[in-house]
Image (cartoon, rainbow, N blue to C red; front, side):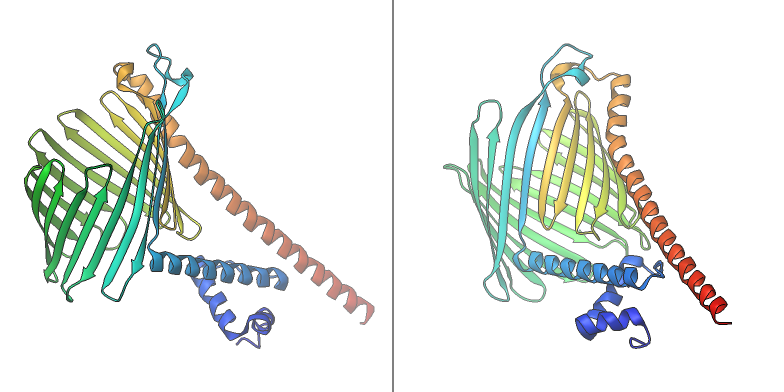
Length: 378
């Protein structure tokens, strides 16, 4: 089969049998059974080469991320400067704060993993900052039990916690946790049962310095990426009730709607997620609506690194949010992801149209040359 195809034979001569298998795997993974055929051998060779290099780069990146478990965040937040009511779009924005964190995981042995990380937070208005050192260790006690200990140091007030998670069977897991901080000690217990094949629940209790109770349920679709989630969190001074509806019409795009209700009032978060570069990168465009504030958050995730740019468009000091301002801010949130999706579809259609036009032009030239040869040698 390889020797009978000129393009595959050229690919085999340059990269060997492993290269041919990688190119075929990349073509299947990218095309998903709907691969467009290119008539020009040179273009088909370049297409196979591009797909093989892309799959190889993806494997190397995922392998590095899996071995080191590198995690990092960078947040640069801006806020609208105080101004008179009704002119929020003409306001000047100022830097609110900057926060960074990064961690790396070291496998000490097959059953012990150590995580080292640090975080910093710098306030933009006065330049006051804080730093935090984070250490964590995870070990597998047996096939059903895992233990984790963590230590966090910020200034002169260290915080520590220790937890044990055990799977009772294939349908239920329990967790015991104890934590200590400058405010006191807290002990918690959680249970995570599978209510059905696609539904999972959770029940958590904590006692001590920070008592609380949390109940939640998550329902996933068996044949798609759709899901529904609901939760209830009870604290001595607050009660939070909320949910989340996830709609995933395609493998690389999803949308979430998460309403919430608390003592501070109603809130809602809208999230659009777009997967880029074969799923290696994800772009999240988030709109957070509260009773007296509106925030837009743009997040880019790649290889465990997260870059976040939140902008407070409407602060609590600006007064109540009017319906017209809410509609205008919602349109500003929805415009960028829709524009990116339209530009991507237009660019993809244009590329395939140009490739098809070049292929048809080359075919017409070859037919014309063949017809001219037959006319010269009847």
